[in-house]
Length: 447
Image (cartoon, rainbow, N blue to C red):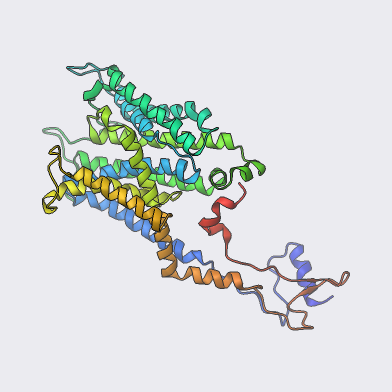
């Protein structure tokens, strides 16, 4: 028996530690092209997390409020991206589910009050009230799932629009829960007796690096923890079987059905998960606004969230965060620096105020993204990272290489394995780039 035959028998018998015979060079282990990119992404994520932990100690109150608005919006944008970007289901009802989270928390954990318009409250512990509000938003999404599971595209968008219209009617007229057009007060959040609020007169100050932590600083860390958990859950969902099934439904629904994916069930699952993300964002927005009014949760808010995921990149979780940061922070930045923009008018004066200019800006950003880079900011980031690491060039070279091992010369038995019985030659298969780490083909794999 030849040396190469012995090596093949050893591998078949499970001997992974067998060394190749003399004269045969071991195949070089190829380094994955995406390993450098993974390290850069991990390092960037850690740096951003450390920066987010330090920022509230040095920012003034206006920037703290801006950061809280960005984090709350980012959670809602992640949920909508799971539905519209990953699954391909157009929804205009995101504002409706956010309103459920807002007023669900206000009613479950709040107390009865109101002067002109009385409203009620169950006065439950804030953590329990927040959890019930998120579950209520998920149940509302589940109630709509028979429709969302059978419709798609513009038909689902029009059907979901009915939820916003119904929601506006309920918010303005269900005064015992929402407080009517003037809204209602939202209770402060507390966790196991620790209140995320400014200490009262005579109470001990909470210090971090000699910086006193008041309500907005404490809420910053609460929002940050919720955002990190929401981000990790969405990322792990996309990396697992459900995420691949959702992407297959987006890419080719018929092919997904042929491969055994229960399309109706997965569409319903995407709508429920997206609704719960919206409910979570609603709870955080309730804590931020403190006195929410029903007029804030109309169709404009749903369109704003669609702008977030389009600018950031459909189907990208980091892109949803970036898009939310741009859309949520732009009007607040313009309002803060309105004195430096000469043509901005005061709000309500009839001219172009900061809010109107912000809508023009991110509306124009949506048009630019759709024309120049449909993948959004996420696609630009991936392209820049590939250029920085040179992974695109390595992948092209690796894909063009037919054989990973040494090339066999005619008559050389070290480059191929010849079966003594059939006389056929077994050539090692070509190993291209690792398709498991390529996000562009993630939706084409079988769940």
